[in-house]
Image (cartoon, rainbow, N blue to C red; front, top):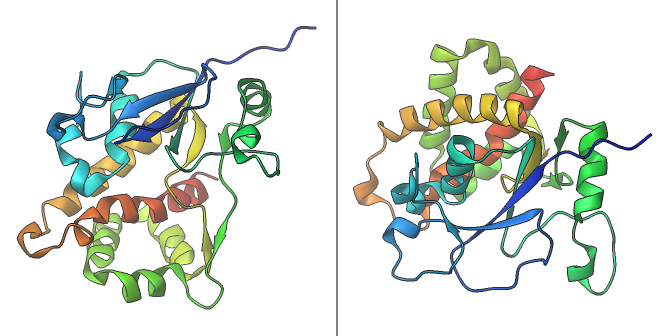
Length: 225
């Protein structure tokens, strides 16, 4: 019996020149293209329904938003130009990246594929954010979840106590689930955005939505079971 082959597209979010795995499962996407002075010659996140202009605060999420609104596929994934998913170990990391055949086999068995957990050991996700960034941003996020998505609050509180998480906004997900996740995620982030004064933030601190979303992925997955 022939195995069903899913149409899997994995976005490689990038803003600079660099190598891309020669495999048609990978789709380079230039993020923040609407404000860039360079053209990398690949798909930009500035066409169709997009938030390309928010890249300085939303980071790779402008690529995810573009895929949510414009990309047709059975499964969509997101990786970075310098950070990929892979199932093998070896000296030549480039040869260890996930292949089309491996991705299709995984998607046949699983609806969501995540990177390995990142462990902080002595700090919780909440305390790590508090010691590294402005905790008021995470407090605003929690308040919005409590008001508009109260069924997600128990998972939010539990995830924030953990010393590990699935980070980097990297995943491969069935498109129907990705659509549901993105609708939830961006609604929360857009509401947080309205409460932030960006004029006093450095370029580093302004990238807050890319960081908050890293923590919200596990909240959504835990709540959805």
